[in-house]
Amino acid sequence: MRAGDGEDLLAGYASGPAAATEATALALARARAASAVVLVEGVSDQIAVETLAGRLGRDLRAEGIVVLPVGGAHGVARYLRRFGPQGTGARLGGLCDVGEERIVARGLAAAGLGAPGSRADLERLGFFVCVEDLEDELIRAAGPARVTEVFAAHGDLAAFRALQRQPAWRGKDEAAQLRRFLGAGSRRKLRYARLLTEAISRDQVPWPLAAVLTAVGEAG
Image 1 (tube, rainbow, N blue to C red):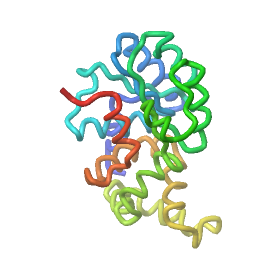
Image 2 (image 1 turned 180 degrees about the vertical axis):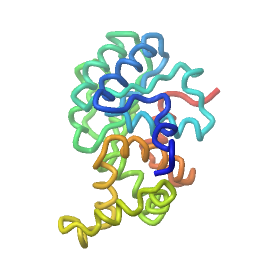
Image 3 (image 1 turned 90 degrees about the horizontal axis):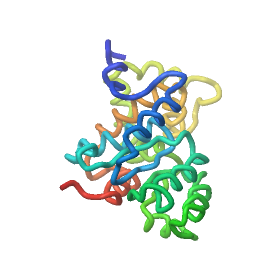
Image 4 (image 1 turned 120 degrees about the vertical axis):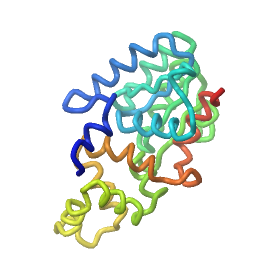
């Protein structure tokens, strides 16, 4: 890792053992008066959404849009009530992992936002599913070769090669190895949420990531 790299990449974001609760608290302070709230599971999702917005020339703060990490899908229902028609009435959108799709659907129904019975219904309500999760989406969009190039540029390629040599991971699918490596440390996961979102070409951006920004309003 280059000197100062981690600190620079995570500037403005919560990190460390209390990152999840701190990030939620910071976003909630800004969300009270927001015109739109994007609900995501964790800080890495928040970083990816905000990084992509910047690449697209979007100023989410100026648009009154807040990306709120909810600390896992089970926190979604609480914030759907808080910011939906039963609360502030903000426009809502969100991302979730495929494993939490039904949890989000139940939360939308409980908050009076609809009764999604399919993924298409979720998408009409502004909520998009990452398969399997955001890291998997980013790896597939960039391709393993591009991901390892980014690792090399930021001093992590040797550590990744060491993981590949471990008995548990030797000979496994490279995309699965990459996903495991990204998930092995909280700071690594946060750093590469930004780095991979920046590295992917505009026409390769994972559709759920781009779609949720469209759902909560175009720039201008």
